[in-house]
Image (cartoon, rainbow, N blue to C red; front, side, top):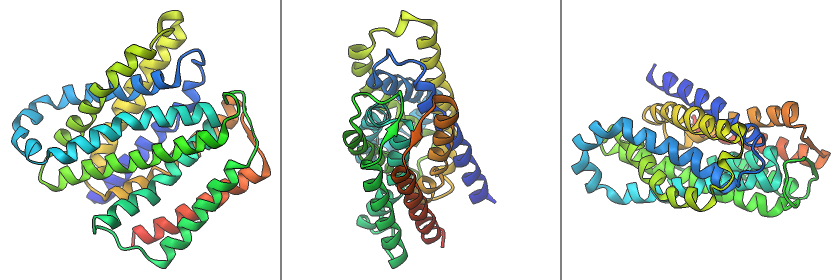
Length: 293
């Protein structure tokens, strides 16, 4: 039952996260770096504040395993900067698909290197489909008003960085939980430290925040709903299931993001781009079957 509840919590987090790309397009005057820093930074600090009593109680354990905390915090800092920049440069659909679609592959590789996962033939075939899908996306035309300078390939590279850091902080937080540290402390400390690291980025890129009520509303929504509430759900799920399983379930996010981008933002992908997404979905299906065995 606990695994089902954990999976359900990750599904809810994925739905909330799937709205971020579309919501961000309502504040085009704001830097993608600022939006990412505010969303993950404020959301992370709020998680930390909520977890302070438990963090104090488990501070000795956190200090004992501080290497995992440092790795997770740095990954939390880099992830939103790469993710939102990827969506700004390559469009909501491609940016989200690459960032989230690459995470399960990268998460499994991290777990394999650490001896926590066994790579199989099915996994390799799935990974090949995923890589081919991303290559097709790189050469596709994305007819979107949200793209800056049509730097799709650079946006995809940033998406891969986002996917790696997403997988990395999921793995490090999971490792803290496996060291008998509570979910509240592991997630609160990891995201709180990452949020603190993002404060300089907020200060340096925050011009234009108060230019309109829309800009403020977008930032408030991003910090409180997908980042704060979403990561509370994700943290609960991560305490019940493995990091590779959790990152695989979050592949629901690009589906939500793509649907919203088409219906709300007006994005359209070429046939090559659609083929790329299809190959990534095949990849995810094969990897999901492999991971959940």
